[in-house]
Image (cartoon, rainbow, N blue to C red; front, top):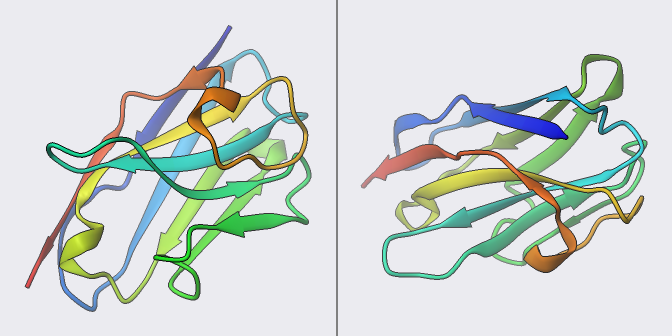
Length: 125
C-alpha cells in the first residue's frame, strides 16, 4: 500500500504563493497518475490538477489554470503543487492522490486509490 503525506499548507495573503508537497512511502507511485483535489467547508471534493506517470502531461481545473502548476519528481516519490496568485476562494483542505489503475491524469476522484490526509490552505483577503 502507498501512504501519501501532504505538507506546505498554511496561511497566505491573497495574491501570495504556496508550494504543497506530497511524499509517497510504502508502495512506489512512480508508474501512477497523481492528482491534487481540494475541499472547502460544506463543499464537495473538487479536482484541482493531475499529472501523468512521468510528468510530461498535466491537466488543470479551469479555476486554477495559469495560476497553479503540478509537477513530480519520481526519483523522490514526491508530487508538488505550486500555487500562485492565490485567491480567498482557493482556501480549502488540499489532498494529493495516486491512481494505480492509470498512467495518465484523471479529473474524477473515483479514479484514485490512495489519498493523503490533507493540508489546510487559508487565504486572507
